[in-house]
Image (tube, rainbow, N blue to C red; front, side, top):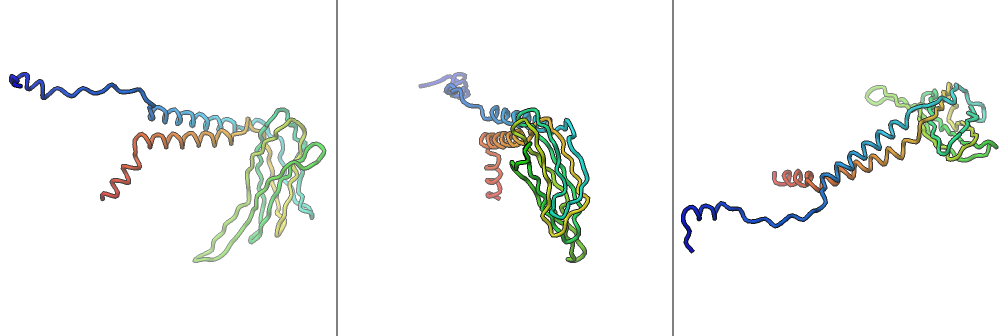
Length: 209
């Protein structure tokens, strides 16, 4: 078939018709939604970590049996109230102490316990060095309203001294919101990688080099 010059030009320049695109899932938008939801959850966790009331504060010394104080009564008025515990103690050089907090109900029956090992080490290795862990923080949640006590005791190579304890009430439990937010952000990163293949391109360029 013969064409004139203008017709041949139009025939060459005209792009082929594209098939209509089918609506599908936009991974970029979905990844952005997961990012935003994750950030909202992290902000919620931060807000819930605010202190609303200091319920107990003391400085104590352990007795011969290792028990150094019993905090309480702590009056819990709502379900799943969250409390934050801060504990600091003096641990002598080359000594350790496992501090345990035992949560008791109004009848002084044990419900659950928590704890952490504190220690203080020194030595010489191309110079003098010192490492220690003399404090810990703990968040606990009381599932039901009621009256509670927390008995603090120590199992140690040498009993700690100058034990400082502070218990404060929090606006809410922040840990579920924190981990939920981290999970959503990780999902958003994975979806963004599936869409852009960023890691695949970087690995491919490294292999080519």
